Amino acid sequence: AKGTAIPVPTWKEFGMMLVPVSLAITVSIGASNTALVLCSVAFTEIIGSTNCLVTIAVVLLLGMPFNLLLIIPAVLVAGGCIISTSGEINFSMVGVILCFTANIFRSGKVALQQKLMTGTTKDKFDPCALLFWTSMPCFLMMLGFSLATEGLEPCRHIGRLQGHQLVTLVQSLSICCVNATMLNLAQLFVTKDLGAVGSQLVAQAKSVLTVLGGMVVFGEQVTVIELVGFMVVLPGVYIFSRIEQQGKKDQAEMRK
Image (cartoon, rainbow, N blue to C red; front, top):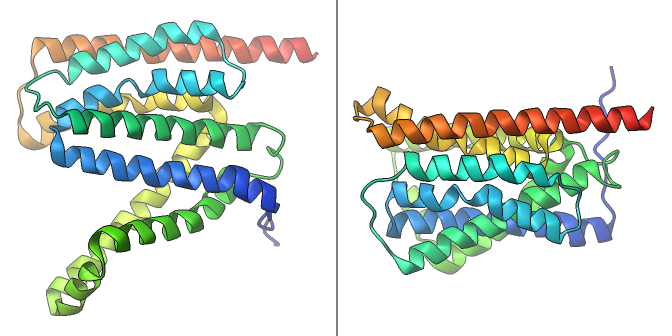
């Protein structure tokens, strides 16, 4: 059986849409990883929980359709994540700027991805095709960033590895690549179905999962405040899904 041919974007689509998406991915990853060096994980989670609110602003600026009622669950999710990740904070102004920079570019990324998969090019770019065409510019941008900041030192370090160390490194990198591919592909499918804001709201559940993962893996204690935050996030995600579902039903009835 023949598979589906990979769609080829025009130069305008590549330069005006795909390259900006790739740039947003590169900057958001670089900024968020650098912020982790300067700030605690809890603090970066607190700032990251405002990502859905930033996405709402980006979607409105791009003139894309948005149900204003979704602001209510967005605020609930953001507030719940802030509560659940509260704790000791190592404040850094540079870290704050990097966290918000990552939020802005991450929000722009998902908004542009939604526009590509649901706008005039929806019949051309599915999640797999979009991931394929953005992976190449991302690779080149990341390579340039690495050469500019680290030079050839990582390559020299890998060249000095032998035996078990080299095998372990290759295995670890392979697992990371497979995990990143699955994660990005799943995120695109969610963005196509739920939209930019919806995908960011669902993603905020990771803050709660981080807390629960700490309990299971490291035996960390969960405070009452964290439990309160957990109970605020879940209704926020549920309210969003109900509003989104009702909106899709109304649109389907209007087309009849």
